[in-house]
Image (cartoon, rainbow, N blue to C red):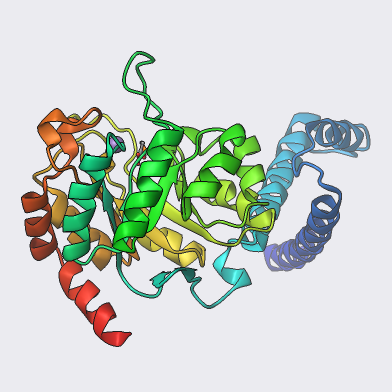
Length: 360
Ligand code: PEP
Ligand code: MN
């Protein structure tokens, strides 16, 4: 009989032999990934896994029962798929591993990603007077990007749906008058051409982050896109959504964290502040934080904006209306001009904006 030391020695040898084989198998799976990516095939192929398990069970010389062999090999398959998924994430065009330098989206004189920006304006464009009043004050306070929805995605089908093309015209004219960059939402592939003719930046709302046909189409458009995170979308899903646009040829994508749905009821959504450094770490795309849709209230926006900037955000989005009480949508979360001026003072944004202005 062999000694325990001899047996242990052989076990160690076999462990290393298994390890070498597992590593060799893993390297082959990365080659499989390259072929699958080239041919657009799914990473996970359950039918093939099942066939391999049956084949291995049939060839099993024992003494492990077939069930144990199948269990061990399905773990190996799972690990290989996980490895391929990691490889795929690193291979995304939006991934930081593909580009070390942070991306900068230049629109007119505004450089999103290079200096802190504030996107402000009402939830919806309601009239020329409303836009003129708000834009005049926003401009005076140093805001460079004017927002305002013309096509509004409303949960209630009977609620105000926006002014449509008339709203686009008002937004464009107001932006022109005050020399501000404009952004507004596109909800459907059929609206892209129309909205592109009026606005400088297209916004994809939270409800449309999973509208893959729309995202794919935006890949062919020559306008920057602010892509908002879906209410229930993971960070990875947001990056995949951005990949649809960037992969289609439009690299001017700006990510926007706007809060996610949780069990908390004090705020409309929960601002996922960890998303900011994670997105910056995982991707080279600029990141904005929409504090208004995250909070759904007006009294905590300055600390949220400070947190966003401290976490590395490239700017914030805030809803501002000349008369929030009578706003036709999101009336409870819009700041009036006085509140917005206080918001700028209380957040670190003013300093950031001044610094950026002095730089240029
Ligand atoms: C908006 O910014 O106008 C909007 C509707 O926001 P979200 O898509 O994040 O809900
Ligand atoms: Mn709104």
